[in-house]
Length: 508
Ligand SMILES: Nc1ncnc2c1ncn2[C@@H]1O[C@H](COP(=O)(O)OP(=O)(O)O)[C@@H](O)[C@H]1O
Ligand SMILES: O=C(CO)[C@@H](O)[C@H](O)COP(=O)(O)O
Image 1 (cartoon, helix red, strand yellow):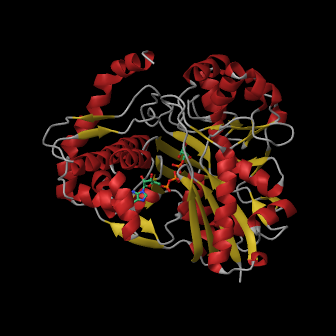
Image 2 (image 1 turned 120 degrees about the vertical axis):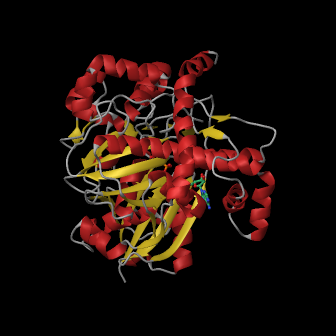
């Protein structure tokens, strides 16, 4: 049997899934880990937590499936993008990783824009300097923690740290490296010019690969730690969104998907480099060789619901555990009892600031219109709706750019909720379809591993063999019309408060 392993290093946890070459899921396992927030707007994780989660999920998947490790033809890793991992000369982690949703680097982003010039940044890296991206984080450490920067010999993205632990190689690939503000995105290689303007030594960065190329083999030490067979090939893999594109079959123009993970993403395939000159959506290399992507990112999508669960639903967590269901199912059942508009309550999901389309790391979340009439179910519904409004606002940018997003798939933990899927379909005004495997990024990198290992000839062939769609939510014109006035008001609340958010941030 030809087996493929996909490891998805998400923000909420690591999901490892074993597939056969027809995309059937043989076993999966998830291990969660903490998100550290040492200051308002900062977000960090411990790379050692990721590696522990990878070891545990791989061992569990092997045990659950009863698969022989030697039958695994290849391994792919998908990862939360942009995070900064710094290692010393011995390969030891120097500090916690600074994550994609950390907003501390506005001053460094301004410095990058001044030094390189906005036009040059856009033409080379295809994106403006953004607080979530990696270059600003590197400059922040250089400025605020010079002792760590001095000791740093390797800069890696989150999934590339796992590659290093599995293979001993310092390497990355084009889809994830696109989110660093250091890659020449049209040429798909490090930009010597940007690196030299920013004073970042090229030797700190890994070797560059395409997503489906083999980057190394599992070492003896990693085989002992995980139960994998020594010598198993590990391919480039991809940033989690580029990976989800493969896992949802979004590998040709006209196809798109939405992710409701910790972040919320809308992602479309593009045959050529397509840039929003206002920088509201990102342009990255695709995991498909020779193609690119357009992508938006709402920072606190699933994170909003997770935050609400952690702060306000402790009993649901216990009840859910006793019933053997997911606490989110109990929460969304409560929300279902609230009407469209959540009894006149609008939630802004800007818990960590907002990226697409606002580009404002000072923005913060709020419930607009709280009344003594409101129940917890109304609040949960407002959270789900606020995230869906944010996604719709991003979709409007794609439509304004002329990018076709009508063939829409969905993945990510939030995509499991029929209520949330239906909201998106009603707000987008198009069908939203699930994929049978559920685990978009893990399936995506398993397919990439299959290409690298010679199981499939091309990514498209791998998708044809392994991606199957599941249920479809259809838009309802009555519900769409009912959402519209709330969506229009949602769009007007942030501009009315932009200045006040800035003032609030200056009080910290
Ligand atoms: N049954 C569910 N209903 C609604 N939302 C859910 C459900 N299960 C998970 N989620 C949401 O999905 C998020 C996790 O999604 P996931 O794709 O695993 O994220 P990540 O890749 O960032 O780790 C949670 O924070 C939660 O908001
Ligand atoms: O910053 C981005 C994309 O630009 C995020 O989408 C991260 O890649 C995190 O992903 P999840 O943990 O939500 O899957």
